[in-house]
Length: 252
Image (tube, rainbow, N blue to C red; front, side, top):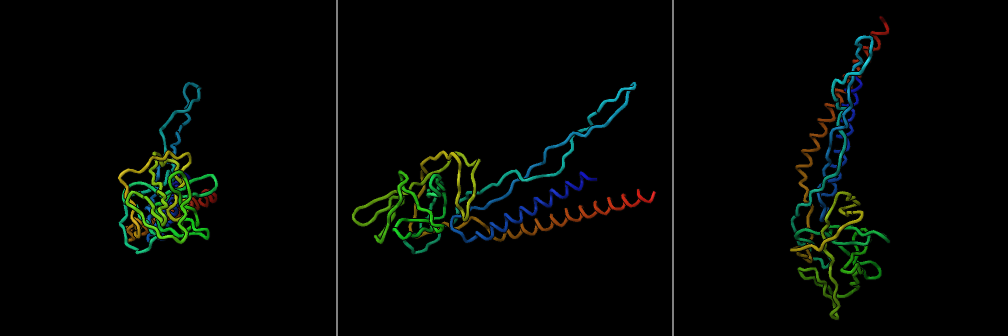
């Protein structure tokens, strides 16, 4: 009975975390470049059930079989399907069509990756994200825009006044096994293996919409709520059975 209790409780924990993930998806439905996330579950490690048997005055343990104690969260899956492109008529808005990420300087030692090209300028005139992180060009150089007129080619070349040029460093990653999601669509990867993105176009005065369908997420939210309630009822029923068993044994 205790095993059933743990199984129902683990189901409730999973549904609670799924609800938090769905809420995060919905809150970022209008975040440019945001990619839908989903939780992957797995069966908990099984335990071997044994029975004590007596034969010829000897006692030994006989394996009866493996028993699962419910499920647990395994990983966070991200769907990098292309989002639709939307016109903005803003010079510092950029969208990617195809694979790849913009590179940003997340901190002194680590590079971040994002599909959100809604950039702006800091006080020194460098191109930065909405979070204040500087955007990187090829060679990991900062992109100085200042007050100059900017235009961008489909290959990511940034043309400025006085024939000054930069190049967006658009890359793909060989592995995303240890990918960490930070903020609104920013990704960090330890020991990232970067590969220059091929056949990827950069569009100016456009933003990539998130690939989230709010209606689908609302349906998932209802499913999660009902599954949570079902597990809750099972847990309550087991609790009542245990209470009756304890009281009945006490009276006997």
